[in-house]
Amino acid sequence: MLSKEELLQRVGDLVKKLGIGLVGLATDPKRLDEATDKVWSLAPFWLRPVGKERLRGIIYQLSERIPRSTPPADSTTDNRPAEARLQAIEEALRRMFGDDFGTRKSLRGYDAQTDVSCGRLQKECDDLEPLLNDSDNLVRLLLAEAQLSGMWQKLQGSQGNQRTAIACYERALSLSGKSPELRAMTLLRFSRFSEEADKDIGGGRDKAKELAAAACAAAPAGTLLQAQCAEHFQRLDKKRWFF
Image (cartoon, rainbow, N blue to C red; front, top):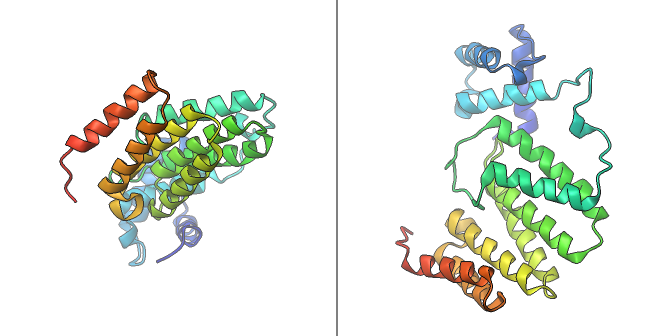
């Protein structure tokens, strides 16, 4: 199987040979569709297994890589306080994924724009981590990265990212000992991920229930978070599992 960079290089060469201009394609859906149709109609045998939708995503990403005459706002130095940047990451993830924390293979299908947006958010997470001195904010960042990795589908799929999500949850748990609320939230989200991701990655029913029980035990008594953890555990207990 070709790597992502090999796919980008080969498709880029094919697009160039066909005389298709990449400038502005990422912001013009009609031109992007026309370019995809043209390349797909002449696709060599090595490109057929990729599929037309992923081909569209590759062309989109090639267009996104072309330097712009005016740098986008998110490429300039970000002088906002670290807390504000962390909140912006969390809000962006809520808009993109809501309360979903894991995705099964091809459940959502590949979307090039989401792929590119996820890449930008991951870069922002990487840039922000060294600036966070407070352990609670670092746990929040790790939870954001875990959701991002759990939901991110690249050209090559999602399983590698989901293993990264597990590492983020485990690291967040190791840092959340002083905050029962953050520990319970981490366990709750980890349980949701285990429920929603492929069983061979997330652990499925047994892992989800184990984490949910731990979340119930960790949540402060009488809080909304405790009620949410208990509701989640009860739902898992009653759920009909197909694996």
